[in-house]
Every structure is written in C-alpha cells, then in structure tokens.
Image 1 (cartoon, rainbow, N blue to C red):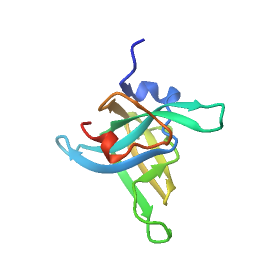
Image 2: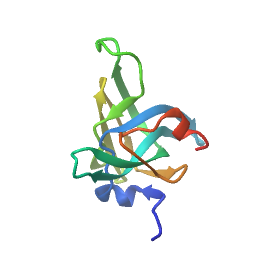
Image 3: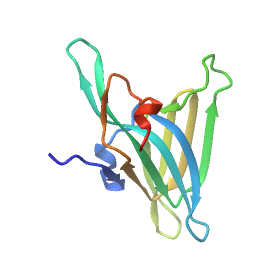
Length: 151
C-alpha cells in the first residue's frame, strides 16, 4: 500500500483538518505582490476508533500552503481563556467558490479555531499540503515535540 503524503486543492472534498493543531504560520513573498500563507500543522491522517472507547490517531507534521492569498483576516484570542499558552487547534477548513469581476475564479477560505476562540479567513485559488515525515500512531490528536523532531 502506497501511503499518500501530498494533498492539493483537488483533494479538498475528501480531506479533513478537524482538530489539527497549528504550531506556526508565516507569509512568504513569491513575486510581484504574491503571498503564500504557510502553516506548520499536525495533520491527522487517520482516526482509528478502538473498542475500549479510546481513539488512536495516525498523525504527521505537515506544511499546508495556500497560494496567492488576499484579504487575510486573523482573529486569535488567548486573552480570555484561563489555560496556558499552547498551539491552537482548528475545527476544520471551509471554502466557498467565487468569481472576481474579471471572471477569474477563486475560493474564500475559513478556518474556524477550536481553541482558543478565533477565525482565519482569506481568498486563495488553492493549496498544497505535504507531510514532512511518515505518520505516527498515537493516542492523542497532536504530536509531542520529540515526535515532531526531524520533520
């Protein structure tokens, strides 16, 4: 069995980012007024439900890059939560297709944040996600720093 290690915009309808942790993000300039939004995430490749009601997950560090973004809005509120700082978790990724006045089509993307509260939104024609190492079987939805090392 060949394991998938890369996803693109055409895979959106069969891919889930529910409960994925985000460790960092950056904006990368790619030419004339072109920016890519790059996320460092733990991608849950597979959810495994056990008979003892404890789930297991196949998780891998991944780089998720949205191309040619515009209209970035970022809300993240750590101030009102009572827990300490940690990576934030997204509820998933939503998209809606639209057309610019010139006829070019793109997507409006929404990344609702589970914890703490927040939302990331922007327009982009698409994404590419690449695993940085093979998935690891764990009993939680995120990897430890040691498990992410070498990725």
